[in-house]
Image 1: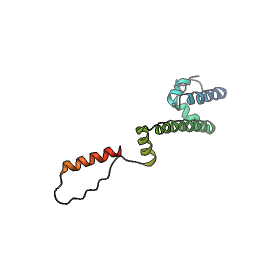
Image 2: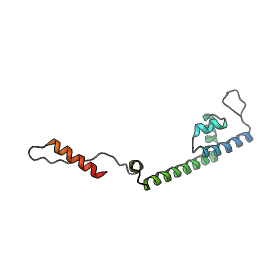
Image 3: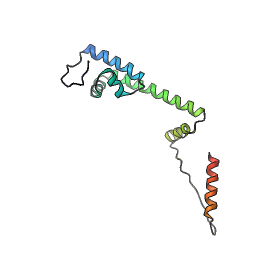
Image 4: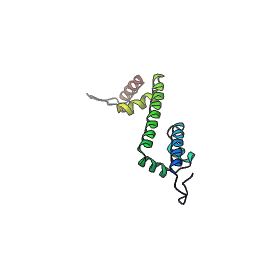
Length: 130
């Protein structure tokens, strides 16, 4: 049942139905890895694309799997955040709150400025933020 060869015969309706069912099972098992799933069941990415365009129910099933996988990933991210993992916290802030690591510094100058003192003060302020 492999259509990699352009000369291969088209799948019968029963073969297509069985392959689509197999695809959905393997797709979820692989956590949404499309290309790996296609290879595993012996279809091309082009075949998958055609099936998704022509079969809205099949396409919807793939989207539902993607949604479940996305929920699982968010759950794992939130677990990391609850454990205090800074990388996860920063990632969430950047993605969900458009947070940036840039700092706005306002400087008011009167007379001469000791640049080394300013740098030291900035370093101390950044340490406090950690």
